[in-house]
Length: 413
Image 1 (cartoon, rainbow, N blue to C red):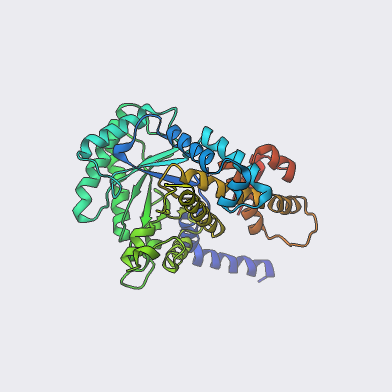
Image 2 (cartoon, helix red, strand yellow):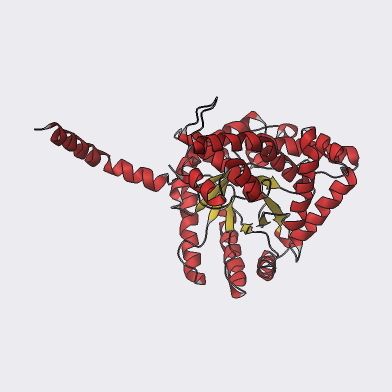
């Protein structure tokens, strides 16, 4: 047997032995999800949703900035920004609050909901969302109750009523997602996947139109009784419908017996849960979101500045750990959300752009870039573009790339 024949034989044997593993890898780990990921999700009790909500939150956030951080120096000090970035970031934050104050809005029918008639509120919120088509945030959806036995019927009924009213007034909005809270098993994700298919059939939606995200706020979904990471099974049980895993700061901490005053996104139990989430979601196209800070920017100057400083620090901490999204609960938190986010991207822009340009142009430098690092650099700059921290002319000037070229680098495997 000649050497080429021998190599061909060995390759064929390896291909046959690994065919099932190759299929499983390609199907289960397709790589990053295409498109923009919002930097936050605003959770709003459904009964409080009304026309112009996003613009109203933007105005309230701008008023807070003008009242409590009217000058760049004070803004930078409160938000923890380097002095050279404060004026630039503040102007970008103000522009963002005017143009797109909320990126993702979730109408809450679970813990935050305190309405007296959920049927009526589901119809009313859906009607308002449909009527807001031109003014709504680019990403929207609702959080239903959990699929645990006590709330299962209510969750399904609200989803059905909401979709019926929404679709009676127009198409499903782009970027529409359902949030499933308090998941404890992969079986609940399987049930939610089937429920989405049934709702699509009932309301005339195309297959795969309904997507959902899972809130990670129970210990059972992190570590099962058999010692396995249940959250990993949840990711693959959704059959492509799962868009994200959202960490639930306070439910998860409380379930582990953490004292109320110690419950935080930076507690060690939160770091552990998020690390498991991160490994479970890697390569699957399922995105990650951190939780929220319940210290709200209300009161006098010191109270507002303290809440902003805490929130900005937590947002920055999440970004540094690869969690590019989080929850916001109050209009004034938009100011610290965008201050920290824009600061993160503006501060890293010169070095990231230079490293990527050197990689593209094969310019020798102090750092030998791997293709995986180039993908990470391109992904970082793409996120900065998506949220408005970076502009396309800046990108072209610093890297020599347009958006299409950047996206190609970010997705090539």
